[in-house]
Amino acid sequence: PPRVSAKVAHRQAVRIGRTMKLQCPVEGDPPPLIMWTKDGRNIHGWMRFRVLQNALRIKEVEAEDAGTFICKATNGFGSVNINYTLIVIDDSSSGRDDPGAAGDAEYSTGLPGKLVRPRFTQPAKMRKRVIARPVGSSVRLKCTASGNPRPDIVWLKDSRPLTPEEVGEGRKKKWTLSLKNLTPEHSGKYTCHVSNRAGEINATYKVEVIQRTNSKPILTGTHPVNTTVDYGGTTSFQCKVRSDVKPVIQWLKRVEPGDENKYNSTIEVGDHHFVVLPTGEVWSRPDGSYLNKLLIARAKEEDAGMYICLGANTMGYSFRSAFLTVLPDNKPHFPPIPDVSSPGLPWPVIIGIPAGVVFILGTILLWFCQSKKHCSSAAMVSAQALPNGHRQPPRERPLPGADKDCMGSMTYEDYLTQQQQQQQQLLLAQGAPKVYPKIFTDIHTHTHSHVDGKVHQHQHIHYQC
Image (cartoon, rainbow, N blue to C red; front, side):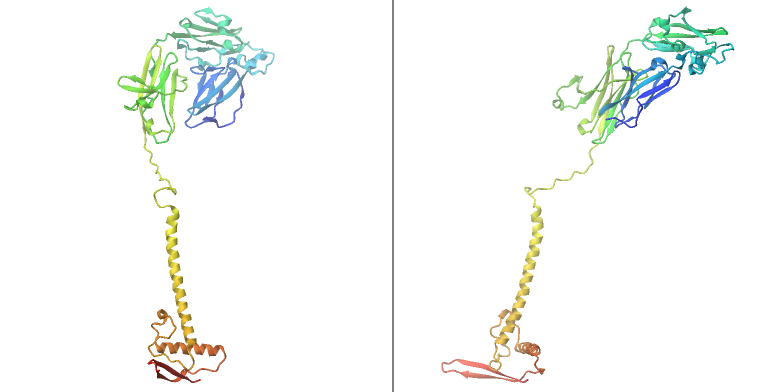
């Protein structure tokens, strides 16, 4: 929604005849529409009042301009108000007893002893002497003058003096003739007669009040226009209607064939169906036209289509259409992460398979290492089990008691070499004298035949230290 973007002073004071600007510092997305009111009345088409983008300017402030001003900012998401209390200071109310009063300087020369004939002090604002206004509008005729002594002013219409009630009360008001809610009877020539003891001056205005012709509303400008919006974006259509009286502005959207059941109610115009859309407030503009906006937030594909702005009053209606295009959603859509119950492999299985393979390979490697260690231990046990001079294995026969898988490829010479190395390590550990490279002198085999027919064969190994 709109918000106030800066601090404001809610009490404002201005002197009569000065120009005043009331700020309306608001911001929003989309930019809000600004409307000003004074004492509850909309400000549009008023003389001396001009609605700017973020301010209200009042030219030549008068005493009757005092009051409560409200700036109301509205967009499709909400509204915000900024209130002002305007105080108008009338310096002339102190009278001539105060020679320094600023108001007296406007009407007198400040030289009480010298006569000065009247003169108009704001001739530039009196150049337009023929004024045409429609019925119901207002007009202000100015004849501000000065002189010494201070001049008097008399207003006449068609050479007939106007009553004080017609002119208005107060010293300042009498220098400006205000005609409000004009009717054809207000047409005529208005003359201001300004005089003092030094002389007199006159100025005449011709006012023409034009009778309005009742007609149906007219859609002005080019709005609404075809619009393109991104998926999920925000956009708006606006419709500007000119009408003698406040019109009814309504937005319609054409229903595509086959989608009639999606809406609670539709209206049929010709061969097409339309749905009536919610319509916001109708704003009156200073130029006498009326404005309404249709906001489309978070646009979706179903928002695309033809929209119609319909303006109607008691004399008829007018309409204009425009198309909205919603671009496709190009954002990537990521698939949802599968849960445990999904048909695909769950993440524990995906992680467990590589871990299981590594565990199996590690187990095989550990078993292989343990097997090699077992082979070495078995060989040592077999060597220690042999007597030092009683058992001589055959040259190509594996040692008895050794693991076939571990010793199947070990020859007799390999066995002797291994035994030699083990004996050397044992003797060195016990502090024995040095062992010569050859630890045996000869090897011979004995064969014995037994009575029962068995043959026993053994070897003798002679060692030398």
